[in-house]
Length: 611
Image (cartoon, rainbow, N blue to C red; front, top):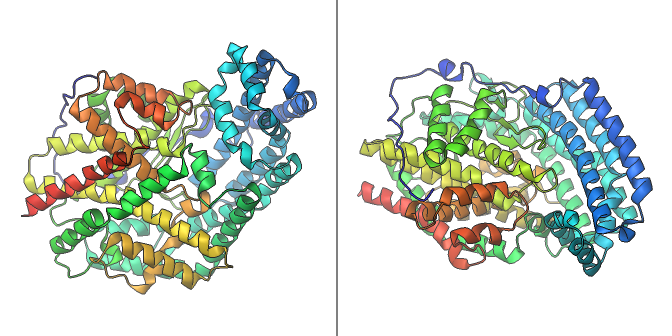
């Protein structure tokens, strides 16, 4: 939209709400849009059909791609996409079922069996991308120049060929592909099942990991400390297991990276994100150089607000004295988020409302459920699903706004089809962080009480520090750990030292870290699931800060239309092309400063209010 006129949300009522009421009637997803259950005949039929088609596809085309005309090659890519979409539907269903209850052994067996079957089937498709990448650029471009159908696939072919220099022989690629289920994937499953079944002893209570971590936002410091003691003990008891998982996966990555000739541990992720190593380096350097004016400065203020000479690690997410700790009922959270979206774009809000009108969200709290939150795109022929653990706190409302942004983005990008709808991680956070910012600004603008406004602003700063500073510290930890692992297996005591090093550097002198904090690296799933993912959060947050600044300034005509077009592009455009309509360029060092200045500006505002 050309104008930046905003609708304001009404200031929410301050009536108290107990925890039971906040958790009442939380939605649970219905996965039947994918399959009715593990024994659904459609699921078995999809696997059988795809296996037949994959074998025939391989027999017909293996060794012959170079001789295909452009239209014939385009048709082959369409067939390849259709088979992968069917496999994607099956794996999405198995993964979501497992995430919903990893304690159920049947779900774990089904998840593993499905992965194994899909790996077997997809091994017949592996030749296709390998053979495409063996075609010379000139030959492939000549085919695309003479075929509008093949030209459609240019973005997918462009991204595929990024990995051309790192491709191994067909036999080696097939071996790595087939061994995945008995190698890396098995270790990831062990990590997930261990976390899901863990119980944390907090006083006389036994809590899930998610519920125990949630205690770090409790107003009572003694309850926060008790939760920290319980978490430290629970993970400390299993630290050798988590160290073994981590050492094994890091070594596995080192071996494969060596064979593929990646220059450094994070290079594969950067190429997957379609971003240059140098751009990531510029982001990391800019954030690390800003620690003192961001996190160090803010947490010094927080220690003063809490009346503490030093903060402990369990005080990092402690509510502020003026913070509204009223629990927000789910229906109020839903309307708050949707109203914020609608103030920016009615179309965006209409798409978002579909997630609540239909059973596409699982927000209920229960044992065995995956902790944290995510949006799973599944496949374009279906729809995304959102997982949250909704405790009714203000941060949970922002998490809802965040994950809904992912879901809306995934629906809009779905029009690009299975192969081209997926967005690189560096851009995948754009809609989520933008949706979160829309919700925050709407709620802040509606608040008139200065003390509550300060608390809300401080909460937003904390969220941004968690997204930018904390994630870059995580990235730094991964980098140090992967470098250290090249010298040999890393003892858990040494892993703890690396963790404490980056935490001390990033959070600053306001903290006095107790030794038990050295085990907290072990619960971060990104280190296991998606190595070097974490910087994408900081990339996305800084990008959105810059993008939102353009929106608030009103300097871009039809901002809403350009923004929706950016989301619809999915993976067809790179960050330079996507940001150009807004006058932004992530390759410019000043770009990162612009994003970090937004956080610094919020802290300036808090300092003025504090003065």
